[in-house]
Amino acid sequence: MGNLLKGKRGVVFGVANNRSIAWGIAQAAQREGAELAFTYLNEALEKRVRPLAESVGSELVLPCDVQNDSDIEAVFAKLKDAWGGIDFVVHSVAYANADDLKGRFHETSREGFALAMDVSAYSLVAVTNKAVPVMNKGGSIVTLTYLGAAQVVPHYRVMGVAKAALEACVRELAVDLGPDSIRVNAISAGPIKTLAASGISDFRDLLGAFEVRSPLRKLVTIEDVGDTAIYLLSDLARAVTGEVHYVDGGFNITTA
Image (cartoon, rainbow, N blue to C red; front, side, top):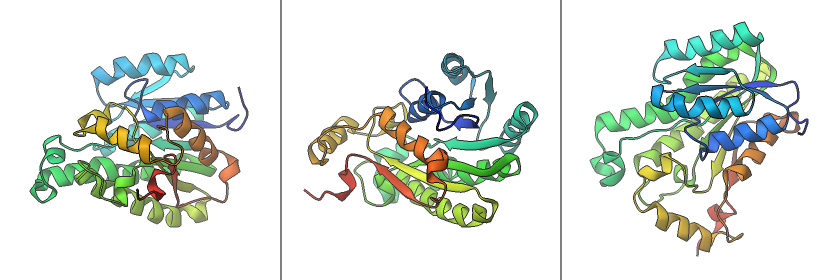
């Protein structure tokens, strides 16, 4: 076990199973000495999340629908009761209706657009709002974005727009919270076989293109993302805020 997060406590939003990017970050954080809490959306996900949380020594596994402000407030109230304060938040939450990822972008429904924006972008604002009152000085908030925020990625559609909004939120929050010594950053991971990615059409083809076009000629893993998150969550990144950090083997710089 390392010491980069020794003595720090944080909450992880968005673990769905052991292939989740959020789980890769949680494992790395536990390895570096952090004490963790987890949230889950519903009973089905609780059955997956709770055993994972227990495997890293966490007893704080809390229900939370990020579309419900009362749920979010309850999470941080319980963390305050248990710990007094927190040092970091990992936000790995995104969602869009499957139908809105299949059609052409101009066919996106009004309801589907609003849902994707609420869950995938505004939830970071909502979570941050409730986290700040219990966050210790020097705290860190890390969210997960994707290349589709900056470029058009096949079949990503409304999620790309939502991720662009998420990155704009990161910049606004970084300016907001800088005077409070709280940092806000995003990680843009390459395509990884997660539960969320299974909703993207032709995702296997996207993986193949990534592996061929990436300068490193390999797919990134949840462990790769986890190690980058440790830098951003730790004091090593004490002067880093409002940035997007790519963990994608250089895929974002290639044009071939």
